[in-house]
Length: 433
Ligand SMILES: Cc1cc2nc3c(=O)[nH]c(=O)nc-3n(C[C@H](O)[C@H](O)[C@H](O)COP(=O)(O)OP(=O)(O)OC[C@H]3O[C@@H](n4cnc5c(N)ncnc54)[C@H](O)[C@@H]3O)c2cc1C
Image (cartoon, rainbow, N blue to C red):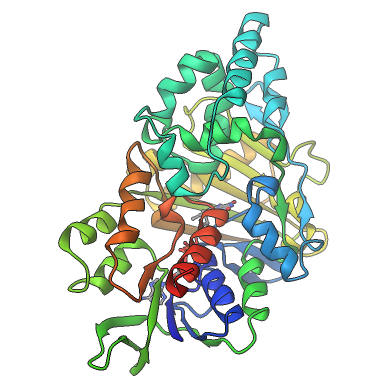
């Protein structure tokens, strides 16, 4: 079988890897000059900067782990014990561990009754039925009862539990108000708290896609080659037009963002299906990386700072050398400042950079000017999963014409595991397995 894969993020790379294992002739088309999509890395002056993703999440990423093992790289990923300062509205700070969600229960802001409510809420959730995979849209749909995360968290963990546990936690992961999110992901994180850990490949999360491509011998990789059109071929199958050439294939894996998939599928799928792809919600997302050749804070006692409430414009500050020393040149440091989505509507790029510098001074202390600053600003950064999202997107799979399958994290919600799972499933769907 000859297959074209459109998009070289973790979803497309996983689909390529899986299809090659079954002997398919695979062309992978990527618009950019590097693979990895929103996990890709930029190397500059000894710094290795993530354009997006920061970490993998241990036992709640089972398919990612299984593939790492198959590729022989499971021992290469480095654990990150992420000591975290939760910064209160009055600048008080409390220590927890982001990779141990239960450590938040011991924050001194909680009194005995607060803690009792949180522990009772967590135990009740732990004992309730829930999704096995937190990144499988079909399963998540089953546990989406139409409630938003803010009301669920207030009811089950209490208002203080929301402010000092759910908000900093989900604020870092998704950077949007809890009222924009459905409940199954966070409920699942609470249920599977004992599986959660943070891990980073030595060259950053983008290295996962690089390892996939290296582990796919015989793959025809076309970088800097955006696919411009997909049409039905007279003899059956499809013709894919990219970089001034045409490729006749038996099957297509569509793994770019859903808006691009909709453009390429216009005329091939019903208007209702196109609307589902086009209406898939994304958040605007910006993060700034401040790069210092000489580390101004070598002894800072934490690697992440998270605001307790959403009164600040930023949702996390991260010392990147603590995540993995290869992120910076020897003796250097880089700080990632990750912004909440709503304030971005009223901020220019200069505002964002200025505010990143202020945040870093507030959190880590005064420092000389960084040697350089890199900003990553996505109009469509993270796929969101408000109530109803999983069921709507999941129904798309049965609406595709024979020989075309969809992949991408948006079938669940942003996260490498969602992309990997969708890429594997897309490959199996195409193979009729
Ligand atoms: C700032 C940020 C932080 C994140 N942090 C984390 C994290 O810490 N951990 C985690 O697990 N996840 C994180 N994520 C989410 C993670 O990056 C995504 O879930 C993952 O990249 C999704 O993979 P994908 O393959 O579905 O899509 P993408 O990574 O977006 O890949 C899609 C690819 O399609 C290509 N493409 C688009 N159009 C075309 C075309 N016409 N022809 C050919 N190619 C095309 C694009 O260039 C892109 O490479 C983060 C994301 C962002 C933005």
